[in-house]
Amino acid sequence: MRLREIRKNKRLSVPALSRLSGISRRTIEDIEVRGDCRVSTAVKLSRVLGVSMDEFCLPKDADAKELADDLESVADHADDKVNEYM
Image (cartoon, rainbow, N blue to C red; front, side):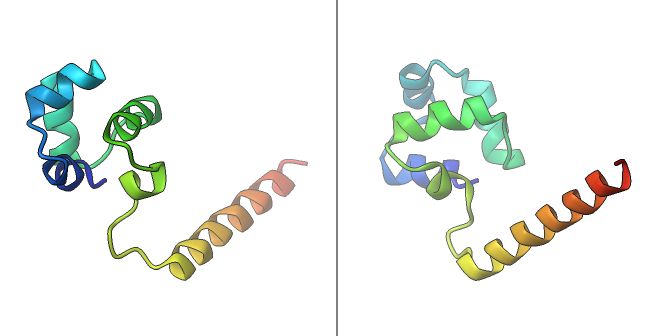
């Protein structure tokens, strides 16, 4: 997640983002350290920051082709698992 980078680019402090989003300071700080959060939290933060979920969640240098290949691989694996149970 690119929370810290985007927050700083928007010149927002953690307390300011907390007030705008309704998300606690501690949660924002934890997200910036861990790099993950609940989808509902990511949606709130991305909306407040005015960025897409892709921009918020994906690494800045993410290669679209590589990500698409990874997603296809995960989908194929999931299909295989579903077929095993049928």
